[in-house]
Image (cartoon, rainbow, N blue to C red; front, side, top):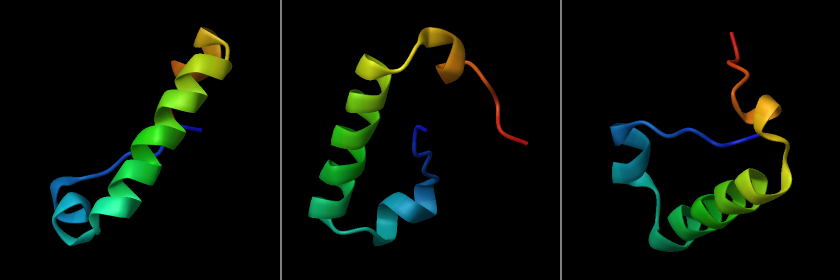
Length: 42
């Protein structure tokens, strides 16, 4: 599952956490089938 952030999240998170989230999202996008990435959460 990709982690989504809003502007307020970005303002308060430290640099390492932002890097960790970016790394996680890149990994998910590289390893999950495209059909799962296009599924919206309600």
